[in-house]
Amino acid sequence: MNRLYRQGWTGWQSFGLLVLRVVVGTAFILHGWPKIQNPTSWMGDGAHQILQLAAAVAEFGGGIALILGFLTPLVAAAIAVNMVFAMGLVHFPKGDPFVARGGGGSYELALVYFAVMLGLLATGPGRFSLDAALWGRGREVAVGEREAWRKPAAA
Image 1 (cartoon, rainbow, N blue to C red):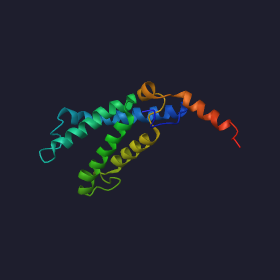
Image 2: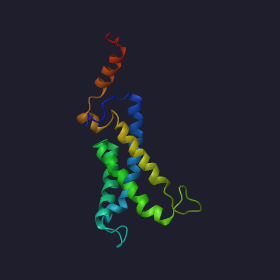
Image 3: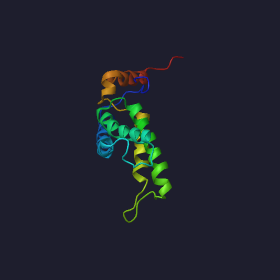
Image 4: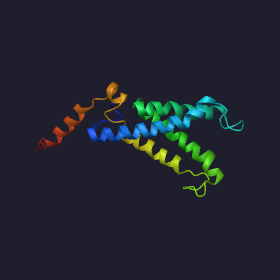
């Protein structure tokens, strides 16, 4: 994991990532809770059971993992794929607009979640995460990189 995120995070960056992970993770737990209750039949009989199970696990389990900052690249990728499927199999075929008008559906939230997952893939979970505690080098990396910028270039 530490190879994916070579750059250290400042305290404020880590705090911002923690808030983002907790809010989005909580939303995914709440979205996934009804699905995890009936993981292979929450969409009805027409949808493939494996896809329903994958979505339920990605949302509910992924929400818990996001809050903890555990296996963040894997979880963010799984949820991003889940959002692509949500847009491609549900929202776009129904003709949902980007923003709902008059109480109809929209693909706005799925696209926002997709963008957040890409952001977490790019930045990592921050210092305040299980990933950083288990596999990260945390503050030492950030301090070492700052010191490297201060050294004069060799001629």
